[in-house]
Amino acid sequence: MTSTLYAALRHLSRGEFVSGAAIAQALGCSRATVHNALQAAAELGVKVHAVQGRGYRLAQPMDWLAVESLSAALSARGMALRFFERLDSTNTHLLEAARAGAEHRTVVLAEWQTRGRGRRGRKWQTGLGDSLTFSLLWRSLRPAAELSGLSLAVGVVLSMRLRRMGLARAQVKWPNDIVVAGEKLAGVLIELSGEALGPSAAVIGVGINLRGGAALGASLGQPITDLGSHLQAVDRNALFLDLVRGLDEGLARFEQEGFAAFHQDWNAAHAFHDRPVDILTIQGECISGVAMGVDGQGALLLRTRTGVRRFHSGEVSLRGAGA
Image (tube, rainbow, N blue to C red):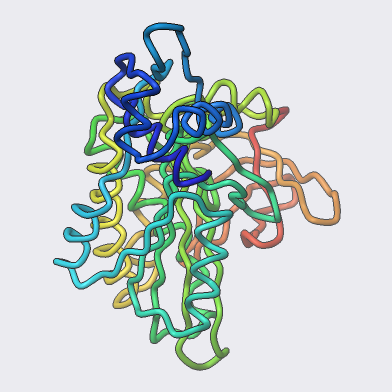
């Protein structure tokens, strides 16, 4: 996304028609430059109405990120914010920054993420303004081996924050999704580095759908939902700050107590508790059973015909039986 397109779209945020001449004057460029920039808006998933004699208008209002106020709010918590209009992946960027010495509790936030990543290399991409995507760097004194339940703890924190906002049906799906009525609302991707016995670093990526869930689900072939389908007037900036505050507090608790502090809450929010599920292993094997929740280390407990089996998140994927 060019800076001209980004700036031109901001001038259309109120949902009213604005002439190309007015935008060009505000940006200090030609009307042709504005026209050419807005022609590329469709590539971002943004529809712009162009009417001769009236100008341009967004088909759907845009909720832009207020960078200065967000940065100030995080700075007051002792956290650093790195903001980008466009970024391939907030996790990829923060992983590189972490290796270069980025500070503990650094947050990378993107207005538009073009190549979002999920578990096991899955791609996740939405249109401009359709989601909230950010990553948080947490430097831990715990070795990486003791962070096995971190993604589950993060899921609990996010689901509880969403419930406080009014989304009472937000639940966790093992190991790293937030779902509503079986449809994916948000995902977590955690990437670890560090010594086996020494300090470690976790880059915690969060992506939450704000709108367009049905269309995204159709393109990906799985049930997906968005906040706009369940809550009215979701403020993207307020949502970001609330989730970051919750994560900051939750991670501090995890640092002191580990997953044990979140174990009971996770099982209480478990979307598939006591329900038949299928476990798909990386070898292609399908194992059926009843999901019993997780143990104290975050491993999924599955009741099968041959007894209870434990599974770790790196080994398998879970889905509802017959899905």
